[in-house]
Image 1 (cartoon, rainbow, N blue to C red):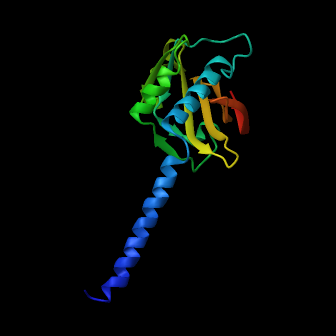
Image 2 (cartoon, helix red, strand yellow):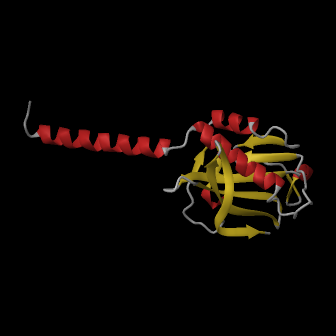
Image 3 (tube, rainbow, N blue to C red):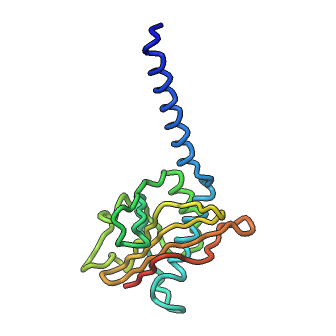
Length: 182
């Protein structure tokens, strides 16, 4: 074996191994698919039942809610210019919908907001779009996730929720950063 190529080969192998380990760490991030399902479902429920921007006791009970499968961190802060996006897996989409049973809406996954039927600047049929960002596991064990709502021009809102694992359930305990409403 040529001795000059050997250090190069070791270098390439070490770099490859490092990239694999970094990649594995980012993908798992300590949250199982079950955790992710509970977190996203809790956020959707919160927006649908409480943070819908209509005030306490005035729930619009949107008959249909569209959920873009491309998640985007600018959901909680539309002014973000370097927002990260990713796509939710089909298995996660199915699991999230199963956790929304009992809500009076039909939940429909769409590739993007462009697929949502609109009429005069509003979601057709008094519907809404609920969208959310990536999950960020914090050092204290909580998770932060940006989320937003749109139902019409000048009709919507968004924030970044903080969730904590309490009594075996991911529970919203507050929010952080910008909170917007229009």
